[in-house]
Amino acid sequence: MSEPLCEFLPELKKHHGIYVMRRTYEGTCAFLSGYELGSGHYFLKEFHSWLLPRRKGRSELFWPLLVLCEVYRDGALPDIRYFTPEQDEQMVAVLFGLLDEFFNAADKPEMAEN
Image 1: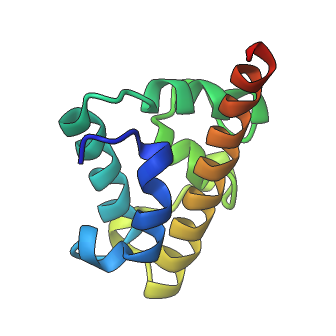
Image 2: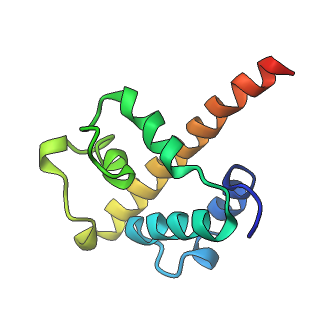
């Protein structure tokens, strides 16, 4: 697992249950934090900064909570420990979609420089 997440993300999405024991939003966020630390490819701080201009949540929120703000109001965020399977599935899909957007946006400046 030393490749950058942008390269590993398609594999993670395809085989989510292999990499994340409990396919929950909480488990997926924990996996991503662990992947960042284990791989040495740091991306979550930039992901957090990328989420902020979307103005869905307050800047002091941790990135998993900012992702929740894409679906839920900032002042009414649910406790992810008590998500239903449907809520987990929805939020994992939202997270993967945002990561795709983030990595696609990050690729564009590099392409312009080449």
